[in-house]
Amino acid sequence: MNTRATFAVHEPATGALVDMAPNHTAQDATQAIERAHAAWPAWRSRTAGERAKLLRAWHDLILAHREPIAVIMSREAGKVMSESRGEVDYGAAFVEWFAEEARRTYGDVIPSPSPDRRLFALRQSVGVVAAITPWNFPLAMITRKVAPALAAGCPVIIKPATETPLTALYLERLAHEAGIPADVYQTLTTTANAELGAVFLSDARVRKVSFTGSTAVGKQLVAQSAQHLTKLSLELGGNAPILVFEDADIDAAVRGTVAAKFRHNGQTCVCVNRVYVHESVHEAFIDKFTAAVQQIRSGNPSDDTVQVGPLISERALHKVEGLVADAVAGGARIALGGVATGGQYYAPTVLVDVRSDMRIAKEEVFGPVAPIYAFRTEAEAIALANDTSYGLAAYLYSSNQARCWRVAEALEYGMVGINESLMATVVAPFGGIKESGIGREGSRYGMDAYLEMKYVCLGGLGWGD
Image 1: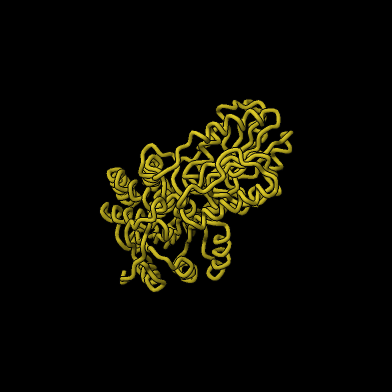
Image 2: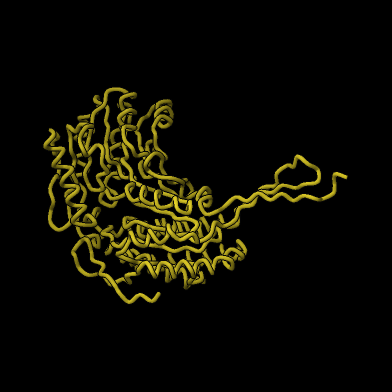
């Protein structure tokens, strides 16, 4: 890249400068596309085994640099060290998985209706991929996109979030060190996010855009993709409910809700946003849940004893404050927390007496606030859970197996956790329905986004004579 301009990356925890990152421009993006497009024929022509070997080398380097990557991630994203280390392992697992899947992009031989023809279905790389990733998982959201794209034979250009460019740059360096060509894997860090996104979708040489972020931006990308019918994968916002039925193991439900609500301080797309509890166990759940949340330690993410860190920005803090204030003004009661504690920190919060017509029931909180609602019947719980435009993740706790299946099938979500609140894994498809996105990532289905299906008809064999 020819860019010399830079921008500062600051710690959400303290405001201290972490480092400077290159501030790439739209012109840089066009040049990156040119290089990637030129590199595509040679990369897709490599055998699956060759690509797999390079991915495996990258995987090994990521794990070998686990601690320095975790430190960078913790500093720029405000993620506590235990979660940062876990994300390095989780993100590396995608590289290992798709290194193996590279060898399994099988096609088909189709029974022919004519004796002098043979019919084939081939799966080939889609072409240049642009991947736009968020700040809350600055490593795993990259590897979950880059690894299958590279495995399929596609060059990739990564545009990480402005808040967390340093993890992305570290990953790129390790990929090149592993032997992945520089033009096949490029990273563009920038403050000009909209401008680079527009370049990706206006250039016909970019055949695929994969985006993880807000639903509002996802809708803009859909509109922009119409110019060249650019293929899209979208992993967008969520408004995850958790349903705790009267026959649930309440202690397990409390542990699961705490884990799903306060991971990365509530700043993940699958974090619980709405806690629905059957009226017969409502008070008991609130007492146990509030006691558990009270034990959460908030502080600087560099401290290994801390469980939640800061919010990513002042804007995020103000949003959380506004949602809580609106709920309280409407009659909700703060059972715990409900206050900013300095800087970009907000106390882990429990809200009760919340109603479904409040803003906090409709909007993604993205912060450490758990609003608790009561319900009477299974049908009511399902209706409340589905009363949202989002459809990413949902959770339920019950000891009745028939109910578990019945409710899981009725919930309008791409992923459902039954008596389990941390369900993400490389071997299962991740993604949502409704306004939560298009497509799936991870698992064997994760390769599909980066492959085209080609039908080949071989005729004139002369066997019908």
